[in-house]
Amino acid sequence: IASADNPTKFKYEEGKWDYWYWNESNYAGQKANLYVKQQSEQQYDVAGDGTITKTITTTVRNDQKNDWWLNGRYRAYFRAFVPEGSILIKGSGAKEEIGAFQQYGKTVFDGFYELSPQQTPVKITLQYKLPFKVKKGEDLNMLFQQQPGTTGFKYILNGVGDKQEFDLSKDQKLTVKL
Image 1: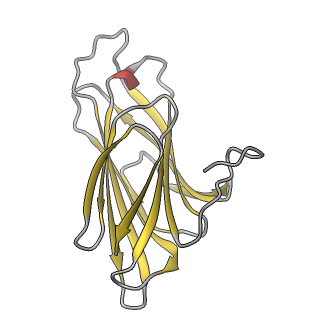
Image 2: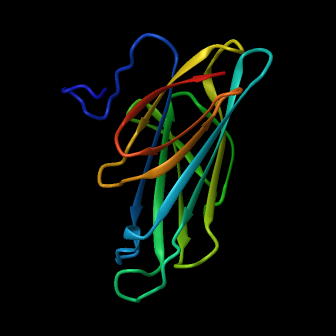
Image 3: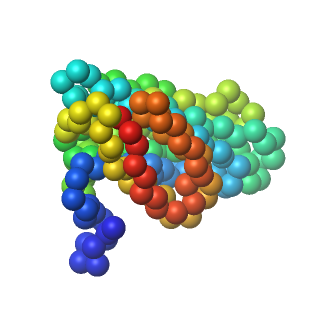
């Protein structure tokens, strides 16, 4: 999917493509990311004119005890890469207002959150409009990219009467019916 000339620029096959790449960095200094579990639920809503509004809720939890050595407070900066031209409608769950900018031919939503062991899970919600339209019942191609070094984040993808669940252990292409 990435070109040899520029590994951060993505080339798509023909058709309309949605895209998702969640990238985060642990700023806390401990290794709490070894214990952090994530789940991302993605919901598509298609208006009568074909406008697609997508709502994504990423839940982050750490159910292990604080041992003050490896596991402790997890302070993370996240970036969610989506198709270029996507427009953020609203975002919530970050410590500060969620930002939006362009990078590597994508729109990026970013923010910061903190999570302590055995704390109530953090829920980051992003609602945005995709930069293209579809007809109801049309298939949409979807590319999920895995952040290197991460394993097994759970994804739930909800189209119209189409629900898919998977653990992201490598980049995946899917088709969702809208």
